[in-house]
Length: 125
Image (tube, rainbow, N blue to C red):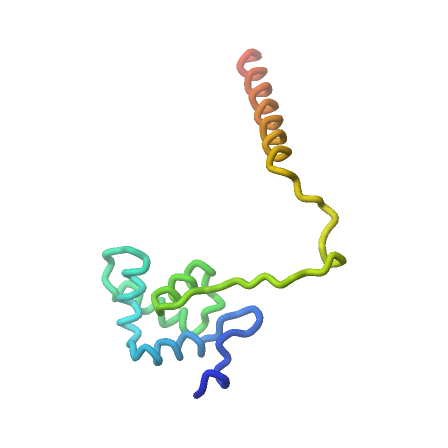
Protein backbone atom coordinates (compact mmCIF):
# COMPACT_ATOMS: atom_id res chain seq x y z
CA UNK A 1 0.00 0.00 0.00
CA UNK A 2 1.46 3.36 -0.98
CA UNK A 3 1.18 6.54 1.04
CA UNK A 4 -1.20 8.00 -1.53
CA UNK A 5 -3.58 5.06 -1.06
CA UNK A 6 -3.44 5.10 2.72
CA UNK A 7 -6.29 6.99 4.40
CA UNK A 8 -4.04 8.41 7.14
CA UNK A 9 -6.63 10.79 8.44
CA UNK A 10 -10.05 11.87 7.44
CA UNK A 11 -11.10 15.41 8.18
CA UNK A 12 -12.03 14.65 11.77
CA UNK A 13 -10.42 11.39 12.79
CA UNK A 14 -7.28 9.30 12.87
CA UNK A 15 -7.90 6.02 11.09
CA UNK A 16 -6.86 2.64 12.49
CA UNK A 17 -5.00 2.07 9.22
CA UNK A 18 -2.79 5.10 9.82
CA UNK A 19 -1.61 3.85 13.19
CA UNK A 20 -1.20 0.20 12.20
CA UNK A 21 0.61 1.21 9.01
CA UNK A 22 3.09 3.21 11.10
CA UNK A 23 3.58 0.20 13.37
CA UNK A 24 4.26 -1.89 10.27
CA UNK A 25 6.56 0.80 8.85
CA UNK A 26 8.63 0.77 12.05
CA UNK A 27 8.62 -3.05 12.03
CA UNK A 28 7.42 -3.03 15.63
CA UNK A 29 5.26 -5.52 17.44
CA UNK A 30 2.43 -4.37 19.64
CA UNK A 31 4.65 -5.26 22.60
CA UNK A 32 7.43 -2.96 21.31
CA UNK A 33 4.86 -0.17 20.98
CA UNK A 34 3.76 -0.85 24.55
CA UNK A 35 7.38 -0.49 25.69
CA UNK A 36 7.73 2.82 23.84
CA UNK A 37 4.36 4.01 25.13
CA UNK A 38 5.43 3.25 28.70
CA UNK A 39 8.66 5.20 28.16
CA UNK A 40 6.74 8.11 26.59
CA UNK A 41 4.32 8.23 29.52
CA UNK A 42 7.34 8.15 31.81
CA UNK A 43 6.31 5.26 34.01
CA UNK A 44 8.25 2.27 35.18
CA UNK A 45 5.25 0.08 34.43
CA UNK A 46 5.90 -3.06 32.41
CA UNK A 47 4.86 -2.97 28.77
CA UNK A 48 2.36 -5.76 29.44
CA UNK A 49 0.26 -3.21 31.35
CA UNK A 50 -0.40 -1.29 28.09
CA UNK A 51 -0.37 -4.14 25.57
CA UNK A 52 -4.12 -4.89 25.59
CA UNK A 53 -5.31 -1.29 25.71
CA UNK A 54 -2.97 -0.28 22.88
CA UNK A 55 -4.47 -3.04 20.73
CA UNK A 56 -7.91 -1.56 21.36
CA UNK A 57 -6.65 1.97 20.62
CA UNK A 58 -5.15 0.84 17.31
CA UNK A 59 -8.40 -0.93 16.39
CA UNK A 60 -10.57 2.09 17.13
CA UNK A 61 -8.57 5.25 17.90
CA UNK A 62 -11.60 7.53 17.82
CA UNK A 63 -12.90 6.07 21.07
CA UNK A 64 -9.77 7.31 22.85
CA UNK A 65 -9.03 10.72 24.28
CA UNK A 66 -6.93 13.17 22.31
CA UNK A 67 -4.25 12.97 25.01
CA UNK A 68 -4.03 9.19 24.62
CA UNK A 69 -3.82 9.41 20.82
CA UNK A 70 -1.16 12.11 21.16
CA UNK A 71 0.91 9.82 23.41
CA UNK A 72 0.52 6.87 21.02
CA UNK A 73 1.59 9.05 18.08
CA UNK A 74 4.61 10.28 20.05
CA UNK A 75 5.53 6.69 20.92
CA UNK A 76 5.31 5.93 17.19
CA UNK A 77 7.83 8.76 16.64
CA UNK A 78 5.32 11.26 15.33
CA UNK A 79 3.36 14.33 16.33
CA UNK A 80 -0.15 15.69 15.99
CA UNK A 81 -0.46 19.04 14.29
CA UNK A 82 -3.47 21.34 14.26
CA UNK A 83 -3.61 23.63 11.27
CA UNK A 84 -5.83 26.70 11.52
CA UNK A 85 -7.19 28.05 8.23
CA UNK A 86 -7.74 31.67 7.37
CA UNK A 87 -11.28 32.84 8.02
CA UNK A 88 -13.01 35.66 6.18
CA UNK A 89 -14.21 38.68 8.15
CA UNK A 90 -17.80 37.57 7.47
CA UNK A 91 -17.16 34.30 9.30
CA UNK A 92 -15.68 36.00 12.36
CA UNK A 93 -17.73 36.99 15.38
CA UNK A 94 -18.44 40.51 16.53
CA UNK A 95 -16.52 40.45 19.81
CA UNK A 96 -13.50 42.71 19.74
CA UNK A 97 -10.44 41.31 21.47
CA UNK A 98 -9.47 43.14 24.65
CA UNK A 99 -6.04 44.50 25.32
CA UNK A 100 -3.89 43.04 28.07
CA UNK A 101 -4.48 46.18 30.15
CA UNK A 102 -8.27 45.82 29.85
CA UNK A 103 -8.11 42.17 30.86
CA UNK A 104 -5.95 43.01 33.89
CA UNK A 105 -8.36 45.78 34.92
CA UNK A 106 -11.30 43.36 34.67
CA UNK A 107 -9.42 40.79 36.71
CA UNK A 108 -8.54 43.37 39.34
CA UNK A 109 -12.17 44.46 39.53
CA UNK A 110 -13.35 40.86 39.93
CA UNK A 111 -10.77 40.21 42.65
CA UNK A 112 -11.87 43.31 44.54
CA UNK A 113 -15.49 42.16 44.37
CA UNK A 114 -14.54 38.74 45.72
CA UNK A 115 -12.51 40.29 48.53
CA UNK A 116 -15.39 42.63 49.45
CA UNK A 117 -17.85 39.74 49.58
CA UNK A 118 -15.42 37.68 51.62
CA UNK A 119 -14.90 40.61 54.05
CA UNK A 120 -18.66 41.12 54.35
CA UNK A 121 -19.17 37.44 55.21
CA UNK A 122 -16.33 37.53 57.75
CA UNK A 123 -17.70 40.62 59.51
CA UNK A 124 -21.28 39.29 59.43
CA UNK A 125 -20.42 35.95 61.03
